[in-house]
Each structure stands twice: as structure tokens, then as C-alpha cells.
Image (cartoon, rainbow, N blue to C red; front, side, top):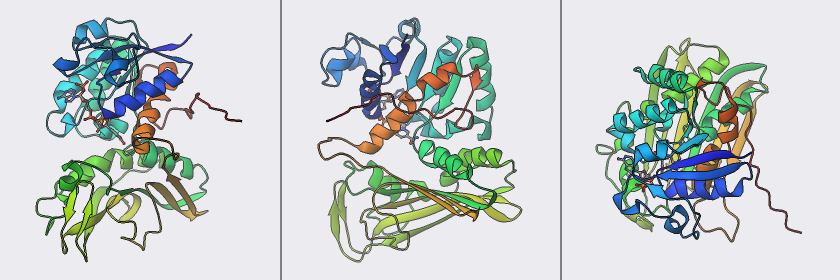
Length: 354
Ligand SMILES: NC(=O)c1ccc[n+]([C@@H]2O[C@H](COP(=O)([O-])OP(=O)(O)OC[C@H]3O[C@@H](n4cnc5c(N)ncnc54)[C@H](OP(=O)(O)O)[C@@H]3O)[C@@H](O)[C@H]2O)c1
């Protein structure tokens, strides 16, 4: 019998998730919630240009929650930056209704135990009340850093340091959002949101705590470090013009200090040209987990697309990290769970071309 799945929010990554659910024989799409009044009542497949699926999109939370389902794929937008409580309350309500949740929203929830405040306790209470399970996957925080790091550490006899990195070329992103967020094209970092004190820590501290708990150590302190590079020439990217002498790349590390040493480091390298940051020998987009110790281990995970693919392969990977986890999360005991607890969750959708 297939697991019955509700898609919660119908944005960009959700489309890839819908395609993912349709491709898995052990999952069945049975409902969809939308935040947008103009999508209310439409067929989910029609909305995405996939043809009619017979699944109505509804803006009525109660009605969607009344649908009999095993799991909710929770993929609302970035309102966690300013107003997390509204969507957090929705999460609690879904868990109390007895539905398991695989979440991509507010990526820091990848390890709620490591989050300041009472978020972990509230999620755990709601899950116990509903007999349901909560898990957040995604890429970073998520599979690209956390799961890759855990995988590398499985081979270690002695660990002196573990470093996890996301590497992205942002030249192809359209729209001003990403450019503004990373400060590309700016003369200095004064207005760069990601580089304001505490911001990179807020993104990555739970990944650091997840790894620390995996290693059985306590993090004494979290320290941020960052640097930017300035363009030697003017050039254009999909999101706009980068004048000469302005920021065209940045690198940051968030360090989990143990005994005065950076034992666990999570970082990003964000650039617009492949040749920038040449000292970091990683071409293309992806993730690196590197363990210094006995033995030394480096795992590189590069994500790209087949020639005939239209879209963003990172969005597909993000969506599928959640979709593929559904059966494992449904089978897990009630409560808050994480990458630390779940067995591997491979795809079940194969295409054999002879
Ligand atoms: N951890 C990771 O690596 C990772 C990777 C990718 C994405 N994500 C996360 O996944 C989520 C979805 O990403 P996306 O790129 O698909 O975002 P998106 O295209 O902006 O879509 C988000 C959807 O959320 C709904 N929404 C918008 N404002 C809302 C609000 N105030 N309250 C509730 N719902 C609202 C809308 O759904 P309707 O259109 O149905 O109204 C919107 O289409 C985001 O939270 C993102 O941060 C995480």
C-alpha cells in the first residue's frame, strides 16, 4: 500500500517534489495546501502544467488537514526569516493531526535539539500528541552538509576536524534576491544580509550541534569568519551587472569550537565565476565533507543535470531529499527525528534505457 502524501505550499521546489511523488510507486499524492487565494480550487497538475492529476489545491487548512494522509511535505517560503511563528504553528497543527511531516521550511530545523528557544520541545509535544514524526531534510542545512558529513565520519578511527562546505556558482540565478543577499555588485559588506554578525551562525549552528552529538562532544563556542573578493573587471550575470571593484564572491566558515579548536566547521563558498577562489579546488556546484584524522577523508558531491533536463538540479535534489525520506519518516517512532536517526532513503524511481 502506498503512503498517502499532502503537498503543503506549491512553490518552486514543491513542483519538483510533486514530480518526485508521482515517480515513486510507494507514494500517492492525495492533497495540497496553498497560501495563495488565486490557486485555491485549482488542480495541482494543471497548476504546474503537468496535466490534470485529480488533486485539488486548497487554501482551507482545516479541510486539507481533514484529508486522510500519512505524510505532509512542508515547503512554505522563507517567512522564517522574520515571522516563523505562523508557519511553525501550522507545523504543530499538522503533527497534532497525526500526520508525519517531512519539512524543507526553516532549514535550521534540521536538528531542532540544537536550536535556541523551545522549538524542539513544542515539536516533540505536538508529535507525541498526534503519534506522528517530524523531520527536516533539504540540502544545506540538510543532506549536502549533514548527511555527507555523517557518511564520511562513518569511516573515521580518529577525528581531528570535520569541515562541511557548500560551493555554488550564482551566475545563473535570475532576480535580484540572491545578489542582494550575498552583496554581489556592492562596494562593501555594510548592507550584505548574510555577512551581518550572527547570521551565518543562525543558519549553521544546528548542523554543528548535529555533528557534535554524532561525535559525542560538546561545542563550547561558535565563531564566524568570512571574506569577500572584488571583481577586477565589470561583467554581467543573470541577475544583473557587476561593476569593476565590487563584490563578486564570498566565503564564510562557522566554527564549532571544542577545547579551543575548530573541531566542526560548516561553510559556504558563493561565487559568480568558476575561476574565483581557485585555491578551493572544487569546480561546479555541490558539497564537500572533509575529515582530517585517521584516515583523512574527502567526499565531494557534485550536482548537475542531464543535457535534456530543463530546470535547476539543486531544486530537484532539495525536493527529493524530502520526498525520498517519506517512507522512513512514516516508519520512524513518534517524535522529532533527524538525519542522525534515519537509515538511508534511496529513490525508488528507476529508468532503464536499453
Ligand atoms: N534546506 C535546503 O537546502 C533548502 C533548499 C531549497 C528550499 N528550501 C526551503 O524550502 C522552502 C520552499 O522553497 P521554494 O524555493 O520552493 O520557495 P518559493 O518558490 O518561494 O515557494 C514557497 C511557497 O510558500 C508559500 N508561501 C509564501 N509565503 C507564505 C507565507 N507567508 N506563509 C505560508 N506560505 C507561504 C507559497 O505557496 P503557494 O504558492 O502555494 O501559495 C510559495 O509559493 C523554503 O522555505 C526554502 O527555504 C530549503
